[in-house]
Amino acid sequence: MEEKKYNKIVIVSLYEKFSTLVAKKISNDLGMLFCSARELIAYEIMDRKLIEERCSVEYLKKQEERVLRNLASYENVCISISYERFMEGCELFQKDSVIVFIDLPKTYIKQKSKISFIRFEERQARLEQNSTFSIKVRKVDVDLIKNKILKQLGGIL
Image 1 (cartoon, helix red, strand yellow):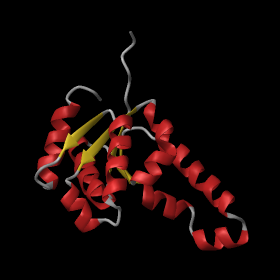
Image 2: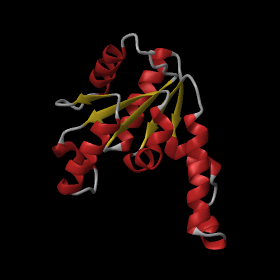
Image 3: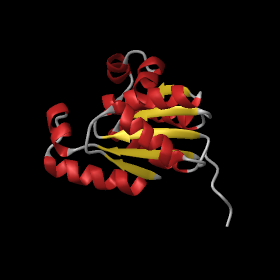
């Protein structure tokens, strides 16, 4: 059986801001580039409202998909991505990405996010299914979680 080759890390959780903090630290420690999918889409698609008004929602979605396809082709990068964006393009990242799901506590998500507990369970299960590995978090500490991820990465990259 051929060993899978990875050339990027994708960090996803149910609270994107936390994923971004962790991804920045990991990219710095590993000497990788950092990219926020949200920021890249905002940069590439400068005026979403205007595009939606003058073109269409479908055109806007195609442009967002184009940016995600382009992002999936990057190498030596640590990407932070929201649940929604990840699920829209998860097949793009499956081939050559180490996908890390940071499984944050329900109480933390409830404080920081607007998702319901029913959706929380569903989203948590979908991320678990589509990740290379997950990090179950009890104590919400960026450095602690970063170190757990680095340990788990071991010789994968």
